[in-house]
Image (cartoon, helix red, strand yellow):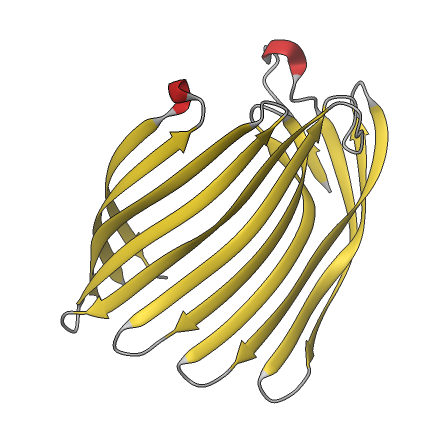
Length: 218
């Protein structure tokens, strides 16, 4: 059960208040010594303060394969509904693939395709809707410099399609980071350079992002 509330002065009342009820069943099944199936799904019920009631469904399917002690392969599909700051309640589909290699030099590769749909007159209205699509990949390389110090390199690329604006965007970036771990504490320092290249010139931009992270493992 989820009870969702927005600011009373929400302009245009895009984010309408609603309650959500989920009835979900999930399983985790070994299909062999190395292959595992994860599946969950069910029904979703929405009660909106002004728009009435709508029904939907939610799915989460995945396969996890341990090819070796060093190599893991995963694939996943998710179909669900997410609240959006600018578009109200949106329907989201996500296809993902993961390759994780853990040795002295570790690599984590994530490829994905997502589609988010928002209909102003209802979550399943196809007559008047906004649709965002993203296809891309991200890669992290990690290498230990010492017992406590690890160097990382992150890079990503995403191709975005926005409708009904018919805007296409290439978004990509790269940046190094370094992590220092002592007992349960980790301190990280990172820099990331990101480019947003749109076919609408006014939406082009560059980011230079520096971050200091401190974490503690319980």
